[in-house]
Amino acid sequence: MTDQEFVAELEAIRSDRTSGAAELARRCLEIAAETCQQDNSPSTRELLARLNIRIDQLAQSRPSMAPVANILRIFQEDIKELTHFPLEEAGKQCVNKARQTIEASLKSTQKTAVNASEFIGGNRTVFTHSYSSTILQTFTLLAENEIKVIVSEARPLCEGYRLAEKLSQMKIPTTLITDAQTGLFIAEADIVLVGADTILPDFSVMNKAGTYLLALAAHDNNIPLYVCSEKYKQLQPGSITPELEAMDGAELNGPELPFVTIENIYFDITPAKFITGWINEDGVVQVHPR
Image (cartoon, rainbow, N blue to C red; front, side, top):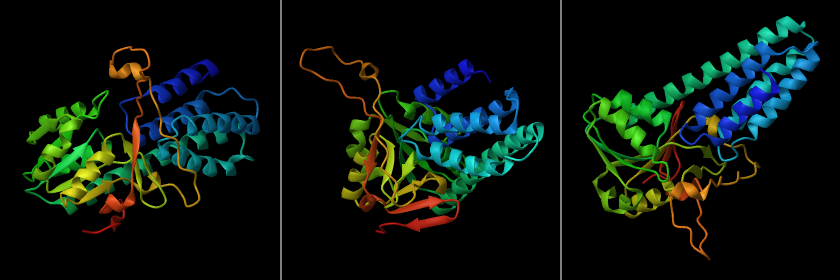
């Protein structure tokens, strides 16, 4: 992969507005693997140096999404041992390790979805927000369990539409609403299930903007809220809270007016006190049981 091609891939990661954090993390690993396959470095040391520079750039590309950095750091640790390998073998090992890390991520997502589907069971109405690949897998497993879903659209790009389309294909009865109607429909839900882009050390959750408002509505109506997310999305104690990514205000299609600033912050933070529990690949962690 040439420098020009890498820059294009890096920009695609930075500008992606539809993929979830886990999906982007795995794409970053694919880029790392492609770097190893196509690199023309004269030595193993130079190959690894070039690869580590790209890993660092990819890890910093989406500051609101912990999995991107976390999964790349795991891979980075794994390739340290390759320093003394012959160049061709080191390249092959890098590709294998990237693929193994991708596979481990996919298995974590699958196991998390299994645990969530078993926990939810059937004959329930689930409220969710935006789009999450882990949540989608959970609903796929629940499709025959007579569930109903309420999904809020998640402006401005309305990723909730994408989830609603998938649910429709599975013939799951779904109510699609604007984010502003959350307070009107929350009482119809038995449980709230959301994904996460980042889980902070104290179990607060960074996710698509609107999650915090959904959590407030759920709390006020005494409806449990569970986060469905793999463990590698959690930051380690002592980590700095990532910045909330702000996107182009033009996405809101608002009027251009003097003295008016349009804000388009994509993520918010839901405090742990509003989160009932966290469902991950190991099971259910109770955060603030109700």
